[in-house]
Image 1: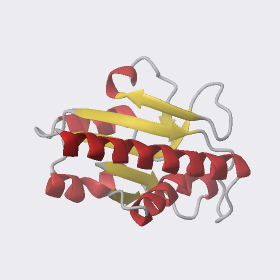
Image 2 (image 1 turned 90 degrees about the vertical axis):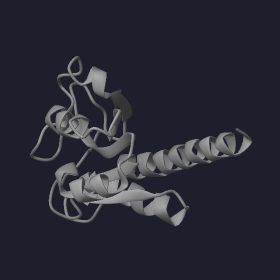
Image 3 (image 1 turned 135 degrees about the horizontal axis):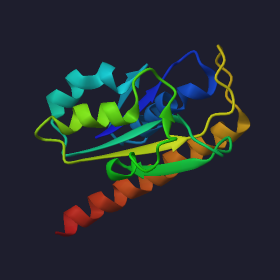
Image 4 (image 1 turned 60 degrees about the horizontal axis):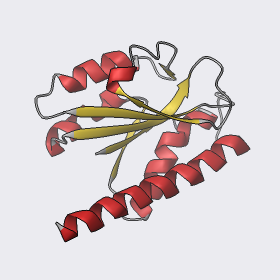
Length: 151
C-alpha cells in the first residue's frame, strides 16, 4: 500500500498528496493521508497491507530541495536526522504500524522541501521530484504486476 502524506496548504509539503493523485490517475492505488499517516489508520486496518510505502516531505541534515531519499524502517534509527514535516516522528509512526500484526515492512520515500509556508505554490525542485517519483513508482508497480502474471 502506498500512502501519500502532506498538508494541502503548505506549499512543498503537499507533494505526497500530489504524487498520490497522480498515481491514482495512472491506475496505481494510493491512499491520501492529509496531515499525517495517523489520519489513515482506518484505511490501513481495512486493507491490511503487508508492506507500506510512505511518500512525504522530509527534512534531514545537508538535504537539497527536490532531493529524493528512500529509507527502510531499519535505517530510521541510523538516519536520526530524517524528520517528517508533520507532528509525529517517522520512528513513532513506524512503531505503531509494525505493532499491527499484518504489516511486515515500512519504507519512507522522502523529498526534501524548499518552501513550507502557507500557500499552494510548489518549488520547481519539488515539482520535478513529483514527476520523477510518479514515473518511477508507476513503472515499479507495473513491473511487479507483470512478474506476478508470469508466476
